[in-house]
Length: 285
Ligand code: NDP
Image (cartoon, rainbow, N blue to C red):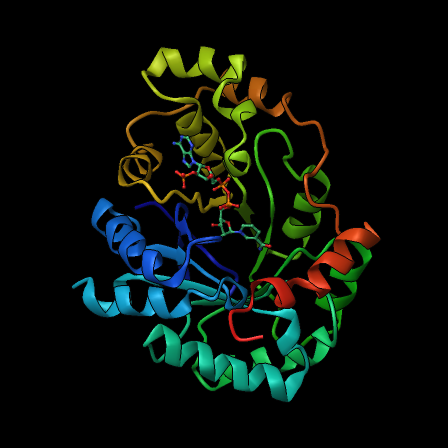
C-alpha cells in the first residue's frame, strides 16, 4: 500500500476504509472484510457510535496493530479540554488499542481550542501518533493552525472529483499538511457512478468510475477513505494500484471540479443540524 509521510514523520496509507452510517454490529464484520481485502487505514469517529465495532475487528483480525492505521474524531458534545481528554480515553477503550494513529476534531463547533489542547496532551502522552482537523475552512482553519503548539498533520474535508477543494489545498500545502477526502464517492450518488467523462477514462484501463475517481484523488496526494458495506465493492474500490492516469486524464478530471460542496459549514441550518445530531443518532441520549 502506497503511503504518505505526515509533517511529523508518521507514515499514513493513501487509501483507507470509512465506516460512517454503519452500526456497531455490522461495523465489526465490515472492518474484518475490509482488512481481509487489504485496507489498513480505518476511519471512524465518536459520533458514528461504532468505535467498539472497529475495536472488536482490530482485536480479531490477526493483523498486527502496528500494521493498521486507525483514525477517529472527537465529537462536538465532547468539546472542551477535560471532556475531550476523557473522551479520548473512552475511544481508546472502545477501539481496544493503546494508541490512535490519527485523531481529528470532527467539526468546528464548541470549545474546539480546548479540544485541541486535549489532543496535544494525548499526543505528547503517546496516546495519539498524529492530530488534525476535519471540516475546518478558511479563516477558522488559519486561526487555529496559527495558534496551536503541535501543528495539525491532516485536514479531512469533503473532497471528490466534483469538489476538489482547490483553495483549501493551497492553504493545506502552505502548512505542510495533508488532505484526507471524505465522501470520495459522492456519498453514493449515481452522478459519480454514471459520469460519462470518468467512464471514457475508465474504459481505457478496464476500470470503473469509482476506481478512476479514487485513483485521481490518491494520485493527487489526497488520502481517500471510501465506504461500502459490500465486500465486492470494498475490493473493487481497493483495486486501483495496477494502473496510472496520464497527465491528460488528470487534467480532464481537474476540469470536472464545480467548487460546490454538499455540506456547507457556513450554512446556519447545517450548524443547527449538527448541534442537534446527538438527539437523533446517539443511542444513549
Ligand atoms: P462515500 O463517498 O465513501 O460513498 C459511500 C456510498 O457509496 C455508500 O452508499 C456505498 O454504498 C456506495 N458505494 C461505495 N462503493 C461503491 C461502488 N464501488 N459502487 C457503487 N456504490 C458504491 O461516502 P461516505 O460519506 O461514507 O464517506 C467516506 C468516509 O468518510 C465515511 O465512511 C467516513 O469514514 C468519512 N466521513 C467523514 C465525514 C466528516 O465529517 N469528517 C463526513 C462523512 C464521511 P454501499 O455501502 O451500499 O456499498
